Length: 443
Image (cartoon, rainbow, N blue to C red; front, side, top):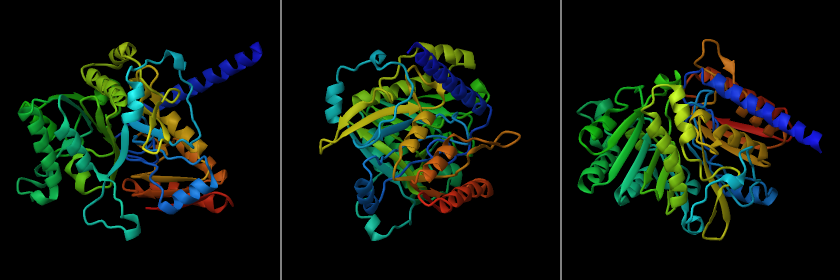
């Protein structure tokens, strides 16, 4: 027995060491381009299955799962994107090797949260994009509507983490920009002004620095100068010599929040496809997300990696993780396990789940199908002098194909299309040569 425990400990230490080496190697690559599949891609989500797929999935395998994640880019986890992960009650439970559950903090109102928390998908659909009638009867709440709900209903505070803030079209299109092109972004800009100045809401914003494109940080600057909000910038390039702050989060009154792929940008409201979640009446989970925001807020004033690591050690631990999720019951009394995970690990507080572990485990536990919607699919380091293959997620997908899992991928192949399409074609070929699994790609 003692020998078995020793072997288990050696195996765990080896896993930890390998994960740390992977994280360290990724920290050496630049991250500014989004990538595909739940972890390597800027805007990734295993999306809703269609009604027919729901019937097929529930009838053929009780271990199917739905996973929504907002993650990062380019073969590295330094994009700092936070994700919301939930498992339906029939899901296979996937757990990471984290510290004992008994040491997790407890919130007094957790039982109440289990009854009141509401989670719904929200999305942005590009203007003039239409779908067949059978797929458009019950559209999700729009990102614009979700943001409106949070900003206009806030009574005390708003926390905003943004990769960019370009709500008004004039920063890109010039002063003569037609308002009907960016009108939803303009409305959001006005709503923030009203919240901060007219209603006295305390607004804190952390924004990525340095701006990548024209107009990226203009409205954050403008709102700060007007006294609407207290703004800080998080420059990971300066602190760690690599990386960007890629999260998109709005927390209202530590009770409600939005988390998703949409930038604080007019184009993310009317000209792009985005996905996220609106979580309401859920103070337990909102306070946990506020702890992630607080790390960004404090890190923005640090000068080097050592200062950040010292700060992280003093931060309060995560309330929930893969070992101790928050249990939520929906209107039909179905139990959902919910928690937040984040990247990179170097900015994660104690007991916070790491994106990569959760995503790979979710793929490994899929039995019937996986639906993937991403901007780009690049299982490699793109911004190093010599390109290098980055296998964790790609390998997990290939193993799923060999297990007979059916996979559908939508990718725009926007950046470096030859490389991205090459990897996707490779997955298709593997699916064609395996009798059980299959891969369908639309790009």
